[in-house]
Image (cartoon, rainbow, N blue to C red; front, side, top):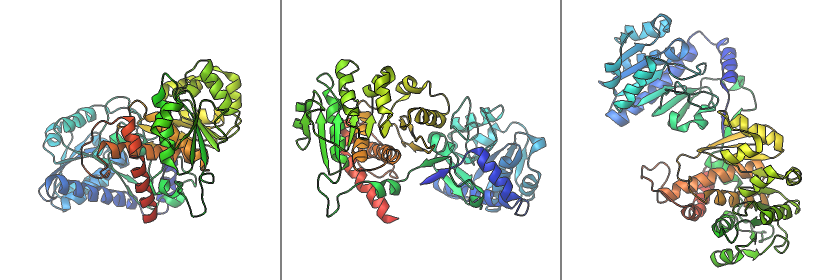
Length: 494
């Protein structure tokens, strides 16, 4: 599991560590890590380090110092290094002096040519203390690099991107890769498109960070270790029986997708209740399907909401599910009904629950999401007394106890009609298998995104450069078993 801390917590930890080590030691360690990653990028993209051109965008303070010392290391390896000083009077003096001693070029104005002609640009403009968009001339220089197709390596985080929320409010860096120091920051999970692949350089910060991280991100081994599979003493009942109340005669697809996801997720039993029972039986003969919740039998957990409608029939279905008194995944129309029906909301508050809103549904429950998606999800989880899964390119899962995780999708393949129905079916099945709501939501979100990527790339690995193709929710669902195999393999490899 990747753990992340806010900029404030990292700053406090850095201050405590710097008081115990020689001056400049942490910067040299961090800069060396940047130079190693820069050398890798130069070898990958330009065939080597010696004779390649590296341009440093150097801001004030320590972030600029990191870039200057990284330039020093690269110059010693034979690269041509040009430092563009954005605040000449505030450039880090030791790093600047070191670069000059090894023959690095330093310019205090312009720099467009040095950026466009470079093989690699290193972003040392601002660090975790920076807020807001890039100002000139930094914005123009970064735009020039982008326009010329020159990759940018970000020092700690892409400049112009908020370190705690990942939001962008104007010009900012879009990095090909990022090297960060001491600890991951929320931006690395919340703005993956801006960071690129992120490498952590250990500078000894761990003992000085709070024990409880501010944000988490699951990896494949976390999910694989918790994904339920049958053991030698299991039968269909002991593995968890999940109920699916979804779809209608108007929207039978929601029923088919949710029920199918529950079938694929575990090897227990899936019960279905709703007006699309015939369609579900036809597609998934192993599902025990009935026309109503009352006729469907007992379950250890329920998923309710996709395609049930927001009229009286949907309201009755939701009420019947809540009356079962078991953990529940509340999705789509169920969220709208709960937002508009106080007595049902009160009933839901008594149960272990996962809410799965997109931004517009979230607004009905807890107000506008705003720029800080993690804070919004935490606010809603506290208010509802339930786990909240806020959908998006980066899905955020928050628990009433304050835990939060971010799941970067790695692509937008799941942005298709019906994919949310698949997600809710996965969550319901995991709840029925006994996972607590926060873990059920987090594991399902990870696997859902992984399955979408596998489907889009023809089941190739994430690390392959196979171009993807658009998929429908049915394709995503079909890739769920392979996604489970892969996360379980990752867990065994740990």
